[in-house]
Amino acid sequence: MRVLITGAAGFLGSHLCDYLISQGHSVIGMDNFITGSPENIAHLAGNPNFSFIKHDVSEYIFVPQKVDAVMHFASPASPNPASPFGYPSLPIQTMKAGALGTHNTLGVAKQFGARFLLASTSEIYGDPLEHPQKESYWGHADPIGYRSVYDEAKRFAEALTMAYHRYHNIDTRIVRIFNTYGPRMRLDDGRVVPNFINQALKKEPLTVYGDGMQTRSFCYVADLIEGIYKLLMSDEHLPVNIGNPSEISILDFAIEINGLTGNPAGIVFKKDKRLSDDPQRRQPDITRAKTILNWEPHTNLQDGLASTIAYFKQKINI
Image (tube, rainbow, N blue to C red; front, top):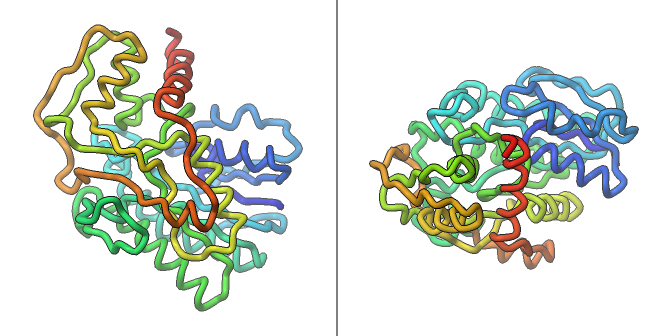
Protein backbone atom coordinates (compact mmCIF):
# COMPACT_ATOMS: atom_id res chain seq x y z
CA MET A 1 0.00 0.00 0.00
CA ARG A 2 0.87 3.68 -0.25
CA VAL A 3 0.05 5.25 3.13
CA LEU A 4 -0.25 8.89 4.20
CA ILE A 5 0.81 9.37 7.85
CA THR A 6 0.19 12.76 9.46
CA GLY A 7 2.32 13.60 12.47
CA ALA A 8 5.03 11.52 10.82
CA ALA A 9 7.89 13.25 12.65
CA GLY A 10 6.35 12.66 16.06
CA PHE A 11 7.13 9.96 18.59
CA LEU A 12 4.49 7.50 17.40
CA GLY A 13 4.28 8.68 13.80
CA SER A 14 7.98 8.12 13.12
CA HIS A 15 7.87 4.58 14.51
CA LEU A 16 4.79 3.93 12.41
CA CYS A 17 6.65 5.09 9.29
CA ASP A 18 9.46 2.65 10.05
CA TYR A 19 7.09 -0.24 10.69
CA LEU A 20 5.01 0.22 7.54
CA ILE A 21 8.14 0.49 5.38
CA SER A 22 9.49 -2.69 7.03
CA GLN A 23 6.26 -4.44 6.00
CA GLY A 24 6.79 -3.50 2.36
CA HIS A 25 4.54 -0.45 2.13
CA SER A 26 5.47 3.03 0.92
CA VAL A 27 4.84 6.06 3.14
CA ILE A 28 4.10 9.71 2.54
CA GLY A 29 4.91 11.48 5.78
CA MET A 30 3.32 14.80 6.72
CA ASP A 31 4.21 17.12 9.63
CA ASN A 32 4.59 20.82 10.40
CA PHE A 33 7.20 20.22 13.16
CA ILE A 34 5.31 22.08 15.89
CA THR A 35 5.96 19.16 18.24
CA GLY A 36 7.54 16.60 15.90
CA SER A 37 11.27 16.54 15.18
CA PRO A 38 13.04 16.19 11.82
CA GLU A 39 15.58 13.99 13.63
CA ASN A 40 12.94 11.29 14.06
CA ILE A 41 12.68 10.73 10.31
CA ALA A 42 16.17 11.82 9.20
CA HIS A 43 17.21 8.18 8.76
CA LEU A 44 14.50 7.79 6.11
CA ALA A 45 15.98 10.43 3.83
CA GLY A 46 16.76 8.83 0.49
CA ASN A 47 14.61 5.77 1.17
CA PRO A 48 12.68 5.10 -2.06
CA ASN A 49 9.65 4.04 -0.02
CA PHE A 50 9.44 7.31 1.90
CA SER A 51 8.56 10.85 0.86
CA PHE A 52 7.72 13.88 2.98
CA ILE A 53 5.40 16.88 2.79
CA LYS A 54 5.77 19.72 5.30
CA HIS A 55 2.22 20.84 5.96
CA ASP A 56 -0.25 21.85 8.67
CA VAL A 57 -3.14 19.39 8.60
CA SER A 58 -5.59 22.08 9.70
CA GLU A 59 -5.18 23.52 6.17
CA TYR A 60 -6.49 21.83 3.02
CA ILE A 61 -4.41 18.76 2.20
CA PHE A 62 -3.25 18.09 -1.34
CA VAL A 63 -1.64 14.73 -2.00
CA PRO A 64 -0.06 14.46 -5.46
CA GLN A 65 -0.68 10.74 -5.85
CA LYS A 66 -3.26 8.16 -4.87
CA VAL A 67 -2.98 6.66 -1.40
CA ASP A 68 -4.50 3.42 -0.17
CA ALA A 69 -4.62 4.37 3.52
CA VAL A 70 -4.59 7.52 5.64
CA MET A 71 -3.41 7.43 9.26
CA HIS A 72 -4.09 10.63 11.20
CA PHE A 73 -1.58 10.99 14.05
CA ALA A 74 -0.96 14.76 14.00
CA SER A 75 -1.57 16.41 17.37
CA PRO A 76 0.29 17.76 20.39
CA ALA A 77 0.08 15.01 23.02
CA SER A 78 1.72 16.11 26.27
CA PRO A 79 -0.62 17.22 29.09
CA ASN A 80 2.10 19.18 30.89
CA PRO A 81 1.08 22.86 31.14
CA ALA A 82 4.70 23.89 31.77
CA SER A 83 5.93 22.36 28.51
CA PRO A 84 5.96 24.50 25.34
CA PHE A 85 5.14 21.31 23.45
CA GLY A 86 2.13 20.29 25.54
CA TYR A 87 -1.45 20.81 24.47
CA PRO A 88 -2.19 23.26 27.32
CA SER A 89 0.47 25.49 25.70
CA LEU A 90 -0.90 24.88 22.20
CA PRO A 91 -4.67 24.84 22.81
CA ILE A 92 -5.87 26.23 19.49
CA GLN A 93 -3.45 24.12 17.44
CA THR A 94 -4.59 21.03 19.36
CA MET A 95 -8.26 21.71 18.68
CA LYS A 96 -7.57 22.43 15.01
CA ALA A 97 -5.50 19.24 14.57
CA GLY A 98 -8.31 17.17 16.06
CA ALA A 99 -11.20 18.91 14.31
CA LEU A 100 -10.00 20.46 11.03
CA GLY A 101 -7.16 17.96 10.68
CA THR A 102 -9.54 15.02 10.99
CA HIS A 103 -11.93 16.62 8.51
CA ASN A 104 -9.14 17.21 6.00
CA THR A 105 -7.60 13.75 6.31
CA LEU A 106 -11.00 12.11 6.01
CA GLY A 107 -11.41 14.16 2.83
CA VAL A 108 -8.23 12.60 1.44
CA ALA A 109 -9.52 9.12 2.30
CA LYS A 110 -12.84 9.93 0.62
CA GLN A 111 -11.12 11.30 -2.49
CA PHE A 112 -9.08 8.15 -3.07
CA GLY A 113 -11.40 5.54 -1.57
CA ALA A 114 -8.68 4.81 0.99
CA ARG A 115 -9.03 3.18 4.38
CA PHE A 116 -8.68 5.62 7.30
CA LEU A 117 -7.26 5.17 10.79
CA LEU A 118 -7.71 7.77 13.51
CA ALA A 119 -5.27 7.97 16.39
CA SER A 120 -7.58 8.62 19.33
CA THR A 121 -6.68 8.40 22.99
CA SER A 122 -7.52 7.00 26.40
CA GLU A 123 -8.07 10.65 27.39
CA ILE A 124 -11.55 10.50 25.87
CA TYR A 125 -12.49 8.52 29.01
CA GLY A 126 -11.54 11.54 31.14
CA ASP A 127 -11.04 10.83 34.85
CA PRO A 128 -12.79 7.47 34.61
CA LEU A 129 -15.41 6.12 36.98
CA GLU A 130 -15.08 2.71 35.31
CA HIS A 131 -11.92 0.69 35.90
CA PRO A 132 -10.38 -0.73 33.79
CA GLN A 133 -11.79 1.19 30.84
CA LYS A 134 -13.72 -0.66 28.14
CA GLU A 135 -14.48 0.82 24.72
CA SER A 136 -18.17 0.83 25.67
CA TYR A 137 -17.51 3.33 28.49
CA TRP A 138 -18.69 6.83 27.55
CA GLY A 139 -16.26 8.60 29.84
CA HIS A 140 -16.17 11.20 32.62
CA ALA A 141 -14.60 14.28 31.05
CA ASP A 142 -14.80 18.01 31.76
CA PRO A 143 -15.68 19.72 28.45
CA ILE A 144 -14.18 23.08 29.49
CA GLY A 145 -11.25 22.03 31.73
CA TYR A 146 -7.58 22.57 30.92
CA ARG A 147 -7.36 19.12 29.33
CA SER A 148 -10.53 19.62 27.32
CA VAL A 149 -8.72 21.01 24.26
CA TYR A 150 -7.21 17.55 23.76
CA ASP A 151 -10.01 15.39 25.16
CA GLU A 152 -12.81 17.10 23.25
CA ALA A 153 -10.76 17.35 20.04
CA LYS A 154 -10.34 13.58 20.09
CA ARG A 155 -13.99 12.96 21.02
CA PHE A 156 -15.06 15.16 18.12
CA ALA A 157 -12.58 13.39 15.83
CA GLU A 158 -14.09 10.01 16.74
CA ALA A 159 -17.62 11.30 16.09
CA LEU A 160 -16.60 12.78 12.73
CA THR A 161 -14.82 9.57 11.74
CA MET A 162 -17.93 7.51 12.47
CA ALA A 163 -20.09 10.05 10.60
CA TYR A 164 -17.90 9.65 7.49
CA HIS A 165 -18.08 5.88 7.90
CA ARG A 166 -21.88 5.84 8.20
CA TYR A 167 -22.73 8.59 5.68
CA HIS A 168 -19.94 8.29 3.09
CA ASN A 169 -19.17 4.59 3.67
CA ILE A 170 -15.49 5.38 4.34
CA ASP A 171 -13.53 2.33 5.55
CA THR A 172 -12.53 3.71 8.96
CA ARG A 173 -10.76 2.50 12.11
CA ILE A 174 -10.28 4.17 15.51
CA VAL A 175 -7.47 3.28 17.92
CA ARG A 176 -7.64 4.52 21.51
CA ILE A 177 -4.01 4.79 22.57
CA PHE A 178 -3.03 4.44 26.23
CA ASN A 179 0.20 5.69 27.82
CA THR A 180 3.13 4.77 25.58
CA TYR A 181 6.87 5.15 26.06
CA GLY A 182 10.10 4.38 24.23
CA PRO A 183 12.88 5.88 22.10
CA ARG A 184 12.12 9.18 20.30
CA MET A 185 10.05 10.65 23.10
CA ARG A 186 10.86 14.34 23.49
CA LEU A 187 13.27 14.77 26.38
CA ASP A 188 11.58 18.03 27.33
CA ASP A 189 7.91 17.31 26.74
CA GLY A 190 7.11 17.17 30.45
CA ARG A 191 5.55 13.70 30.64
CA VAL A 192 6.41 11.38 33.48
CA VAL A 193 8.72 8.99 31.58
CA PRO A 194 11.14 11.61 30.20
CA ASN A 195 10.89 13.63 33.43
CA PHE A 196 11.89 10.70 35.62
CA ILE A 197 14.62 9.39 33.30
CA ASN A 198 16.17 12.84 32.88
CA GLN A 199 16.26 13.37 36.64
CA ALA A 200 17.60 9.87 37.28
CA LEU A 201 20.41 10.17 34.73
CA LYS A 202 21.43 13.48 36.28
CA LYS A 203 21.48 11.78 39.72
CA GLU A 204 18.70 14.07 40.95
CA PRO A 205 15.80 12.99 43.17
CA LEU A 206 12.72 12.06 41.17
CA THR A 207 9.86 14.50 41.68
CA VAL A 208 6.60 12.77 42.62
CA TYR A 209 3.55 14.98 42.98
CA GLY A 210 1.02 14.20 45.68
CA ASP A 211 1.37 10.77 47.29
CA GLY A 212 2.27 9.03 44.03
CA MET A 213 -0.69 6.67 44.25
CA GLN A 214 -2.14 7.84 40.92
CA THR A 215 -1.68 5.07 38.36
CA ARG A 216 -0.80 4.64 34.71
CA SER A 217 -0.39 1.64 32.41
CA PHE A 218 2.70 1.96 30.22
CA CYS A 219 2.94 0.26 26.82
CA TYR A 220 6.25 -0.01 24.96
CA VAL A 221 6.12 1.72 21.61
CA ALA A 222 7.01 -1.35 19.49
CA ASP A 223 4.08 -3.28 20.97
CA LEU A 224 1.72 -0.37 20.37
CA ILE A 225 2.76 0.06 16.73
CA GLU A 226 2.22 -3.64 16.08
CA GLY A 227 -1.30 -3.37 17.50
CA ILE A 228 -2.08 -0.30 15.42
CA TYR A 229 -0.89 -2.05 12.26
CA LYS A 230 -3.07 -5.06 13.03
CA LEU A 231 -6.04 -2.73 13.44
CA LEU A 232 -5.28 -1.01 10.13
CA MET A 233 -5.25 -4.38 8.38
CA SER A 234 -8.45 -5.55 10.09
CA ASP A 235 -12.09 -4.92 9.19
CA GLU A 236 -12.99 -3.40 12.56
CA HIS A 237 -14.71 0.01 12.48
CA LEU A 238 -15.52 0.61 16.15
CA PRO A 239 -12.89 1.93 18.60
CA VAL A 240 -10.26 -0.48 19.95
CA ASN A 241 -8.12 0.11 23.04
CA ILE A 242 -4.40 -0.49 22.45
CA GLY A 243 -2.24 -0.34 25.56
CA ASN A 244 -0.72 -2.36 28.36
CA PRO A 245 -3.14 -3.48 31.10
CA SER A 246 -0.33 -3.77 33.69
CA GLU A 247 -1.17 -0.92 36.06
CA ILE A 248 1.53 0.71 38.20
CA SER A 249 1.50 3.62 40.64
CA ILE A 250 3.64 6.64 39.83
CA LEU A 251 5.55 6.05 43.07
CA ASP A 252 6.40 2.46 42.14
CA PHE A 253 7.32 3.65 38.65
CA ALA A 254 9.78 6.15 40.13
CA ILE A 255 11.32 3.43 42.29
CA GLU A 256 11.69 1.21 39.19
CA ILE A 257 13.50 3.92 37.21
CA ASN A 258 15.83 4.75 40.10
CA GLY A 259 16.73 1.08 40.31
CA LEU A 260 17.36 0.68 36.58
CA THR A 261 19.54 3.81 36.40
CA GLY A 262 21.36 3.26 39.69
CA ASN A 263 20.21 6.66 40.89
CA PRO A 264 21.03 7.10 44.59
CA ALA A 265 19.19 10.41 45.01
CA GLY A 266 15.83 8.83 45.81
CA ILE A 267 12.46 10.56 45.55
CA VAL A 268 11.13 13.94 46.62
CA PHE A 269 7.41 14.49 47.17
CA LYS A 270 5.89 17.82 46.20
CA LYS A 271 2.45 19.32 46.46
CA ASP A 272 0.16 17.87 43.83
CA LYS A 273 0.17 20.18 40.81
CA ARG A 274 -1.94 17.99 38.58
CA LEU A 275 -4.50 19.68 36.41
CA SER A 276 -7.95 19.65 37.98
CA ASP A 277 -9.24 17.12 35.45
CA ASP A 278 -6.14 14.88 35.43
CA PRO A 279 -7.18 11.21 35.65
CA GLN A 280 -6.34 9.48 38.92
CA ARG A 281 -6.30 5.99 37.40
CA ARG A 282 -5.68 4.70 33.91
CA GLN A 283 -5.83 1.06 32.76
CA PRO A 284 -7.12 -0.34 29.47
CA ASP A 285 -9.37 -3.31 29.05
CA ILE A 286 -7.84 -4.90 25.92
CA THR A 287 -10.32 -7.78 25.54
CA ARG A 288 -11.42 -6.48 22.12
CA ALA A 289 -7.82 -6.17 20.88
CA LYS A 290 -7.10 -9.73 22.01
CA THR A 291 -10.28 -11.08 20.43
CA ILE A 292 -10.44 -9.11 17.19
CA LEU A 293 -6.75 -8.50 16.46
CA ASN A 294 -5.10 -11.36 18.32
CA TRP A 295 -2.90 -8.70 19.90
CA GLU A 296 -1.51 -8.04 23.34
CA PRO A 297 1.73 -6.40 24.53
CA HIS A 298 4.73 -8.65 25.15
CA THR A 299 7.53 -6.26 26.24
CA ASN A 300 7.95 -6.17 30.01
CA LEU A 301 8.47 -2.84 31.74
CA GLN A 302 12.10 -3.47 32.65
CA ASP A 303 13.14 -4.30 29.08
CA GLY A 304 11.21 -1.39 27.61
CA LEU A 305 12.63 1.07 30.10
CA ALA A 306 16.18 -0.23 29.50
CA SER A 307 15.83 0.58 25.80
CA THR A 308 14.31 3.98 26.56
CA ILE A 309 17.01 4.86 29.09
CA ALA A 310 19.72 3.91 26.57
CA TYR A 311 18.13 6.30 24.05
CA PHE A 312 18.04 9.13 26.59
CA LYS A 313 21.67 8.52 27.54
CA GLN A 314 22.65 8.87 23.90
CA LYS A 315 20.62 12.06 23.45
CA ILE A 316 22.08 13.82 26.52
CA ASN A 317 25.58 12.38 26.05
CA ILE A 318 25.81 10.40 29.28
